[in-house]
Structure formats: structure tokens, C-alpha cells
Length: 295
Image (cartoon, rainbow, N blue to C red; front, side, top):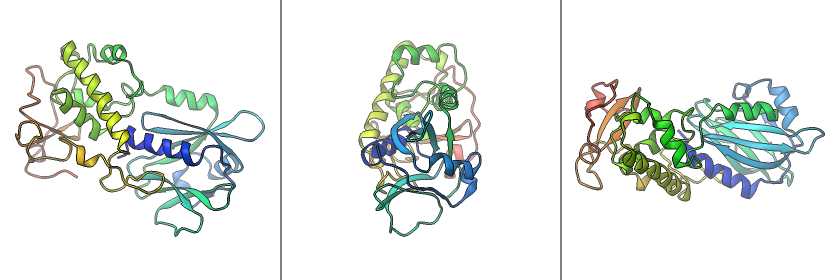
């Protein structure tokens, strides 16, 4: 599932290749991908110019200018398998392409593709857009250390779940939460409110570090994620624990383990990330004991 680095990579591509360009027309090929009326979506986006591109957490927002009145805001959620690409107009249409937006030069178009259709597009007024982004916690690349530590204070439950709670910290998912916890040498079942200050500071630095590195390498690709130009990310070879169950830890050679935390697969090194005395409970299964892989 695309997380902050993947969405930021798409945002950077849009800023480089689509900023200032006009959307000539819009074709909605699958209405279910649109939040609201597809006809209204076409009306609100056709003829508009992409005036700005912003991101918060995993959410992408395009500011659309060019008509009388206030700008509209196109909010894009990639979901699990969503892709935004800039394609030559004559390029063959890939399966599961749900929206086409030819641009003003007549040679290229933006396309939204989503094989599982968990992603969506919607157009919002400024107040609606700000309210929806306001429901998210601070962006994981922009949060200050003081905010980060303050948000952990008094929190119970699993640290891994806290990291992935988008109302607490926007942008982290399974991949980068596992990698940040490994970087900070913290067990996924540690409780946020029980983590010592020094360890919490390590975690803050680890989150920022892993996100910055992943953004610089255009994110992580396993199956579906590609950037604006259709290229996979390059961070997968740098992963230390995620999806490395049974493989030796890159620090100490201990086999990486996997447990299920909050219904999600979590990877860690039992030696580098020892379980604390005051650990949160977890929902586990035979898969959590390493007998069966979880997709």
C-alpha cells in the first residue's frame, strides 16, 4: 500500500511535469472511483489548471485554478493499488484505468489506475479540503520532536499501532513503521507511554530518517506502486526487517520474526528489539509464529 514516500514521489513528479498545465477534458471510465457525482466531477475539473500540488500523510491534493470564483481541490487517495501516471496520449490503455485527463498540449494525459478500487478521487471546496486534512494527525515528515514525544505521552496499546494511526501521525503504514521501530531498537508491542524519553527520541529520528531515505529512492515497490512515469521505487533493497521473516538480521544475524499486531503483520529482530516487560497485548495466529506467510 502506498505510504508517505510513495505519495510524496508522485507529488514531486506532478510538480515537475504537470504544474501549470490545463486539464482539457476528463473521462470517467468507472464511476465507482469518484466520491460524489461523476458528472459534477467532470464539470469541476475540466478546463482547470493545476496550480499547486500538496500532500499530507498519504493524501494527495491538486489545487485547480482557472475558473471564476474560488479554486477547487482534487483530493486523490491511492488506497492499496492506486496509480497516478502521466502517459502519452496514444499509449495503450492499461486494464483498470478508471479516469483519463488529457492535458493542454494534446500529447500527454494523466491517468488514474486502480486494480482493487480502494482508492478514490473527489473534488472539494477549500473549507471541505482543510476540514478533511485537519482530521489527520501531523505529517510524519513535518512533525516536531516536541509534538511527537507529547503525542506518545500516556498512550497505551502497541507502539506499532500508534505509529500507523493516521489521526496520531499521518503517513506511516506497515513498511515504514516496521523499519522505524527497527532503527530505534524498539519492539512493536512496546507501549508508547512507557517508552523512555531517550528511546522515544531515537524513534522520532528513526521515523524521519527512514522516510527521508525512502523518498530519496522514490519509495518501495513490491507489486503495484509506480511513480508518475511508471517506474518502480528503489527502496526495497534497503529494507531491514519488513517482509524478511526468517532471514538474518542485518545487524546481528538473528532470524527476523513476524507477529500480528492489530491485525497487521509486523516484522522485527527479537535480539535488537527485545520485548519489554510492559508490552501491549496482541492478536496472534499460527502465522504470527512464523509457520505460515501472511500476504
